[in-house]
Image (cartoon, rainbow, N blue to C red; front, side, top):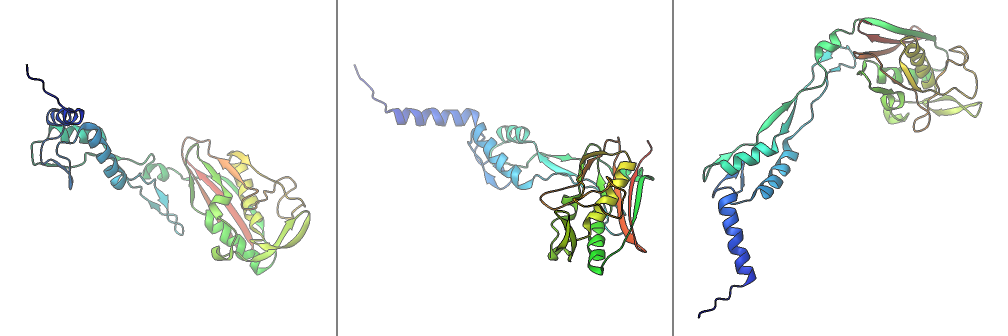
Length: 266
């Protein structure tokens, strides 16, 4: 009787070859420019997932031109259908090249939804006084949040909209209230912009999430109607509870700080 001794490694190699022959991609198959012949489904899935990371992109929602307020249409994104791409690779003929299966990802909101924003639902104005540096800071803050879209259910953050009050962003030293006293600080005056916007948001019946009062009364709004902000600490935040988007408009003109909230029909 003859006895055959087959090593475990050799047996494993045979099993692997049989598995790849019957269950893997055929010889010479490529996905885009990558050779995947005889690869098994799990290996193909890993390859396609890596390719997907390179080419997938998220959709971009419509926006507004910062200066003119003109609507800039959104852009669709792309998602790779990994399962279908792998299936196509497994069924492809030898020496063939297949492409990634791509599907469009549409923006959640359309340009038309912004075209319906035609009504001023909240407005507030405050009188300006102070130095040219304080005026510059208010103008810079207003410009930063002007023509900001807040989509339904989305939260607006004044600090996120204006960013740190630094010289690089155009802010200058001006009086600020600290511990009930006036002292010089970068971005002094910005709280008048946030307070003006806060009162417009109140009138528009938006959902106020965060608002802080100053440690000393201010002259530009009635008591209890101010909104102190300090980047990284105190913020003004509110959410849009309406069915459609709202648009924030802010500017400074003729010694007046102006804030408006625009929306669609109630």
